[in-house]
Image (cartoon, rainbow, N blue to C red; front, top):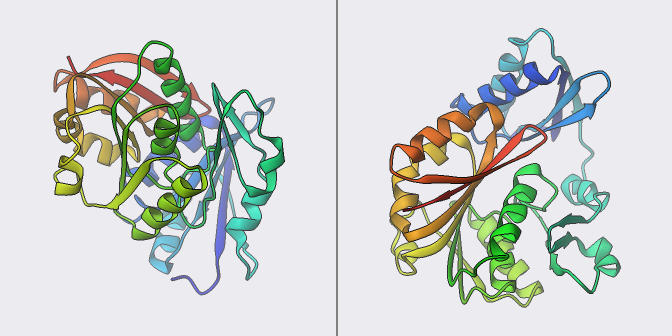
Length: 288
């Protein structure tokens, strides 16, 4: 672990920031790095990467990689010795994505009566609903729900569990989430309890785990992870779907969209829809 909790910020033009973010995903030393990318100043084309390294080796690799993009202005800030993640989340507004309203404990009084309200506490897991990839998945799911329901749903890399919980709260009898991080699994199960959702979350490595295979074939698979594992899991995700089943994929930058699409198209999947939010892409695909 790093001696002090750090936040490394890089600002620059969109094209450069997106290229740097794609490089972070590809580099082995930073492919599991927690970071976000967003537009900070539209008028002046300023995009911002916020990264939170958790080990000295990760910090060093991050700084070296960002140094290869001279147009980025990089700064490092020390985070206070407190639950900085909880503090940051306490300042985030609730999020509306179609019929879904995602909020934290600090905004519980703002939930409308007309929406599917999801109270999500992040803890140390990813997926509050504020990130463009999570919003993209919820918007894609909301659109699909206008035409059909999904009896069996799998959420690969579930994080806080928000996507599987959204499925359970909209009528899916089976909603299973998996993650390689046991802390995320614990937090997701706690969130399911908070939301009175019949979703369950298990610690599993890959889609061939017996706990995952037990629910197959699935009508819908969420995978909001990163581009490299999305490509690596293309065959497994297709195999987990029943014929006609849907995959909602995100966690990828627009610059990575072609590569991820190619992996699934080459396996016979069909693109149904693409959604873009900030620098991020969400793909909706169907198994023939």
